[in-house]
Length: 460
Ligand SMILES: Cc1cc2nc3c(=O)[nH]c(=O)nc-3n(C[C@H](O)[C@H](O)[C@H](O)COP(=O)(O)OP(=O)(O)OC[C@H]3O[C@@H](n4cnc5c(N)ncnc54)[C@H](O)[C@@H]3O)c2cc1C
Image (cartoon, rainbow, N blue to C red; front, top):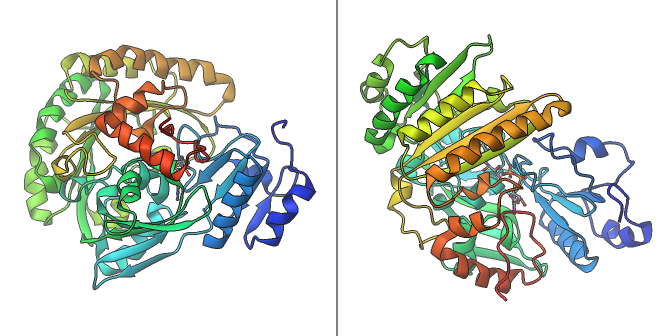
């Protein structure tokens, strides 16, 4: 098939008869909007976008794709930087109309459909003063983020998003609807908690919730970038001493809206406000910040703190990432020097300290294997003009090529896997869990229908 070509009407007829949502084809109104994803550098032209209204539509679309040998992209929030939520020529099974969230405040659980974003989720759960670990940017999909693991501000106390998953409803490659939980299909449940979208389209997730807020402490302390080496050395020591309620924390090399190059410490506290003020005080007193933006705020507002930096839908992006056990002086120096040579003011270098509850889960308890305290390093390149792609991608690649050898192990949080990363990185990141995942893949998706993800090949 030629990219962007529609499927033959005779082929489509069977699906039309069995579909309640919207089928969007090349050349029809809304196709360009429907095929676009958050990363505008991903410019794919699917043969069909199937916007599903419910589970029956997802089953119909999966069966149709399999029976017609189509490449399948499952789209949740459409936020994946590598562009796994779309494809050329094949079918996008678009779950984005499926955003329902139902909270059971007595049981402290929430059911959420597979196309919801964290903004949808947090809005409903905070009605009851409840939350679970979600992403640091509110318009990221619950689906992709949870299946790959799920890093967020509550992680120090409550673990990853996938650690809070109680069950999932999954449409598998053979079109069956399975529930996965600790008691139903427990092998599948194990694989869904970190194994990405490899095992099927998840139509609903059930999460455990925790009392959070309504007011929490959060924000950033900003210094000039000329102080970055000292700030990041201070932050490295400070972050590792934070209690679980200090969540995960982060630091970013970025350009402020007025053009000032800066370094920011991104800090939160999930407990009583006065306690948080005491815990975060040393970071606010360090050096001479140009801004101290740490303050009490509603939980839902804190969940949007980083939104602005990543808001623009469809601009050009390229992302390199990896995990390091130690944040050495050499890594800090390379990142700071790399930031100084950054060609775009929209780009940033972000690092997060992951520690606390997530690291107290055994590496083989779920598919997510990276269970020791670590540093998640991200070179996030963003620019407007597609003509500047070579320069900006070159910057991110060049910087990462220098940093990666210092990280050790070549491991990466799979949700940050780049499309041009080597597949060995996936294997390294799952470590000893990889063989079990490959066996599970053979059981649930032997033909690798769901392969647009950090792919686990079915065991041979
Ligand atoms: C600005 C930004 C901020 C981010 N911040 C964080 C963060 O704080 N913490 C964190 O952990 N990650 C973060 N990420 C990474 C994020 O977790 C991944 O990009 C994730 O893949 C996005 O999920 P999505 O559903 O929005 O993406 P999509 O592009 O829709 O999908 C991504 C992958 O997940 C699969 N998928 C999505 N939904 C389903 C489903 N319901 N069933 C089966 N498969 C599904 C898709 O098939 C695809 O392989 C961030 C990404 C961006 C761009």
